[in-house]
Structures are given as C-alpha cells and as structure tokens.
Image 1 (cartoon, one colour):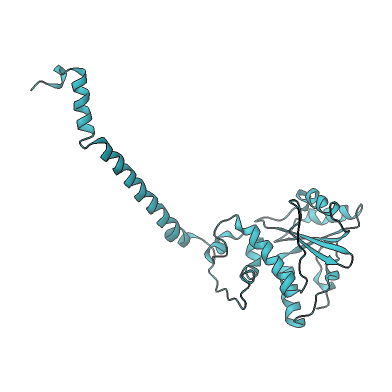
Image 2 (cartoon, helix red, strand yellow):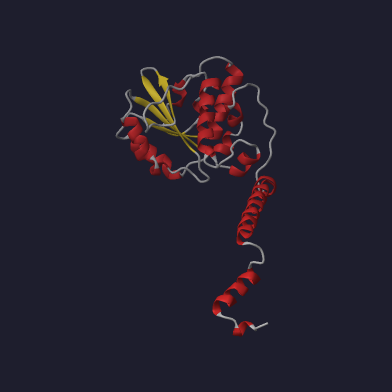
Length: 242
C-alpha cells in the first residue's frame, strides 16, 4: 500500500473522512439529534426535580374553604406583595415569575369582594389602575405594587395622576398596596394633596389583610364602609372601628 504522503490529495481527503466518520454521515446526524433530545430531557428533569430542592422558600399547608381559587392567593398575600418568589413557587401559587403581579391583583379583588363585601367595578380601556370601587358618587381606586424593596411613591405618582385625571367620576382616595414604603413616599402624598382633592393612601398588604380578616370575622356579611380608607399618607389602623 502507498503511504498517505504519496496518495493524491483527493484520496487523502477520503481517508481522513473515513477516519473521522467511520459510519455514514446521515447516521451521525441522527445520533447528534438523539443526544440533543437526551440533553433536553436531563435539563427538564433537573429543573423540575432538582432545582426546587435548592429554593429557600418555605412550604406551607394552604387550606381552601371554598372553590374560589383566589382564596389560595389571598393566603399568600404577604409573599405576593414582597415577591417572595421561592415560597410562591414551592407552594404552587405561581408557575412563572410574571404571574406574581396577576395573582396579587386577584387576591386583592378577593379581599374587597368576599371579605369586605365591596365588589370591584369592571375596568375598561388599556391604561387603568388595578382596581376600582364605588364610593357614594365617587370612586376609590387602588394599585398593587409587588416589589422586593420599598415602594417609592415618587416613581409612580405620574402614572397614578393619569388614572385619577382620566376617571369619569371624582376619585376620593387612591390606595397604593405594597409590602413597604419609603419615608419619602409620605411627603409625596402630602405634596399631591396640596393641588388635588384626591387623597393618596399607602397601606401595606399585611395591614389591609388584617383589616379584611378582622372585619369578616366580626361582621360576617356586613358591608365594610370604605370611608375608613379616607386617609392621606400612611395607613393608621387606630382610626378604624372594627
């Protein structure tokens, strides 16, 4: 046999191809596709079975007393407000991080409709707050802010101002519901009230949850008077008679 050095270039190329691909090229393509499928399967198993064990969230026993799915969200109200994504994932409240805001809004609707007996009004259009309640001949609006850090009202006041000014009725109170607020947010409420008849109420998820649960326990099916929320700045629960 001739050595590779004495072979024509085309023959040398064929020899190298046989060396590198000892089986037909189409079989290599099939093998690569199979390996990719196995890698994909391993990735799915790692995500579904292994990753949850490394989350820091706590598993809680969440019992439902009704068929209303929102009840389960309400029981994780604090976690939704503070974006405790690990706990929310572990307790199957959310499947994707983006669902946190939606579930927070749904839980707030449940709070007003079921516990405080004030059914939220239908929202129309594309730019609107998260919720609207009828209060005498006015509205009470609210917006949920799900954040891992303190809510800073100054970052959102222009947005809220548009909601208030575009309302077809006067807005008595605009409620901001979050996990916590910056000190400067209180000053922002005062500044806004200087040029507007609308009060801005900053209320934490824990505070409004406590109000709703206490009212529901003590008054059952009575309608909560939304006038208790006519406060400017940080919520003061000592003003409520429940």
